Image 1 (cartoon, rainbow, N blue to C red):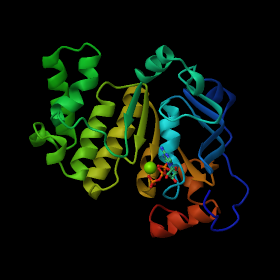
Image 2: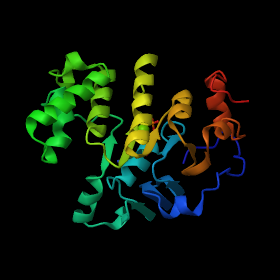
Image 3: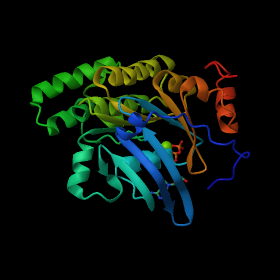
Image 4: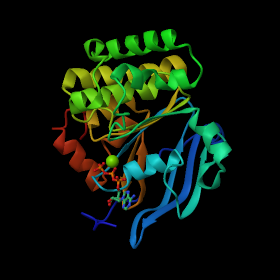
Length: 270
Ligand SMILES: Nc1ncnc2c1ncn2[C@@H]1O[C@H](COP(=O)(O)OP(=O)(O)OP(=O)(O)O)[C@@H](O)[C@H]1O
Ligand SMILES: [Mg+2]
């Protein structure tokens, strides 16, 4: 684990109602992930209540992407439990994992688009895989691309896209089938402020209209304030802080203070 910048304050964690915890579509407890000698996650606990968005913030390399992959069953864990939609993904058999993944949309940090498919084909893929007729899948994919300002780029392939375009196509693909659970790894990194806001609004819309439960990894404090019901700080392998946005920006953790300072205090922190 990386060396701490300063000793962290005792972890402030918002008390969740018992009902929130019992019904939570995503629960991680005591999760440990190590690569050889390097322990990335250790004693990580996190509960994502139904229909809420939890934003995970933290320094680069602290394990945010590893955490999302572990939730999706794409990263083996050395210890702990991860329950997603009622399934223990840490030791699930293939059939159970397939069932979990069918409820899950994942925007990978890298985009992970299929490089021989056009933007339209990439976005339509989850629908086609779910048996939606091709014409309807294409129409819905086209509309989704329009919403993120990519109506003119439907026929571009990933190697013809800018980084921000690929990110938006990945966003469209993750959300097109309105999955119950959404994992967004840096959905707005590298986007201009206007497009950022569009994506943030679509994330909020997905929660409000379809009741999606989301985990969003972000370095953007203002976006986190807009999209998050709770903001969590990943620090030294575990969730060190989980609080509603207005309380998060006021908490004393030194890394949170750095995020607020970097934002110029515009998000409203002390
Ligand atoms: N498959 C792997 N094999 C070995 N080490 C890995 C692997 N995946 C991740 N790591 C290491 O785990 C640590 C956490 O990586 P992760 O990608 O989760 O960071 P992050 O918090 O998402 O960072 P960033 O903000 O830069 O995206 C890093 O030190 C990384 O090198
Ligand atoms: Mg990452």
